[in-house]
Length: 292
Image 1 (cartoon, rainbow, N blue to C red):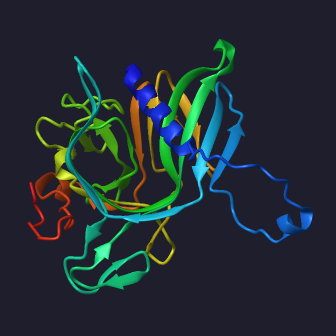
Image 2 (tube, rainbow, N blue to C red):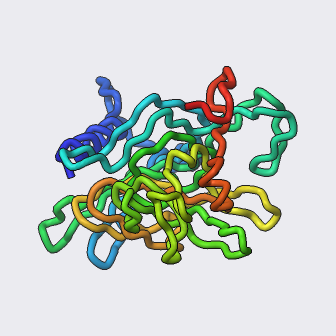
């Protein structure tokens, strides 16, 4: 991992922690006055024990609704390749037609469907056996829900997609490299890992560029999309077992960049190969389902 990544984390933490400096005389506050004050801390700091690492998580007590577009992004670039590379990355989208259903409500054409993020956090992992050396850090949300669109050429991490083989069998999607080797590091394809996949010939395998929009979240019993606590991007010097904010799961992230992208979607494998998953409308002017 490049040292710049840790520098970015330090700058972010510094910006979160700074406060204006003023000249003022501090006066004690009486118990009666304190009793009249109610509220919630803007930032919560937790120390979390782990098996191989110790963790410090800083959570902001804010909720965010956003729709944002990024033209080009590359993270974890070395001479050997790029951990994550995507063009036209977007969070959130715009309803293309009237009556679009999402998160339990209907949207009219042209209405913004925000990406929802509750309690963003930054978390540090340190190794107590090496003098609390920084082993990695990640940025995520206690709860997240919404669309993620991109034209991705290299992906490191996990995409929680399910794939239907057309015969009633549903599989957890597997990431592959161009040689059909299953990998969670700098993958370029996605498919079904049942021994028949052949990415070069489009057998149970498709380029990641075919997957232009995903819905991040968990499926509710009524078919709507609920929040997930496992959406994050991590930067690791070594393998780190990250715990979900609610403590329900542990996700192992390898060295380098790791993006955990949980989704409630199930996609037909043949459709993914031949047609792909259409891109949602991510710009105010609709440029079509195959924007790029």
